[in-house]
Length: 255
Image (cartoon, rainbow, N blue to C red):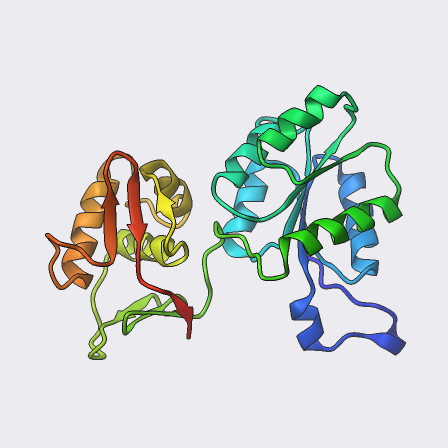
């Protein structure tokens, strides 16, 4: 990830750097990635680049992203597929880069969740202007819901320490969780009030643990309920949405 800065005479403080919008550029062309990173950094953005779907997902798992600039033509999963995947899991806005200027191509992208398109070749001023406009529409409060939270999360008196990988009950007692149970709880706590299908839970947890796979999601949920619910048979925290998946109902706040 590139840490941005302006001239030495007007260098931003650490607080302003951390508050700068974080842009993820996904393009398999190293030259374009380098160019966009330099241009966006000059305009005060923090920038991370990714060359393919795997690198994009890895970044989303460990970082907080405010906007994704996504190329349509990528090796493996193309930009349209990644746009659909991302928009189904996150409110993070997406600007697609495309050499295709035909209206049907743009309509497909918009229907899949893209917020804007910019055709190649494009000017730096146009890209920055479009990014500013999309961020303004989205609001600075938006953060990717696919990225895991950092630090400590609090819900209904419980304390979930992401760094130490510890869970404390409202009474302050440590509650032992397996690696799979912990990562599943992180996935839920990172998406409060949101319906999560089994497939989404698998995808969110994938890469953090090898314990969660296929239908074992149901088994992990059952075990997790026994450890955090007052009545696992009538769960108050992890609700089953019949035929759809699960929803984590408590309000979650950062500690």
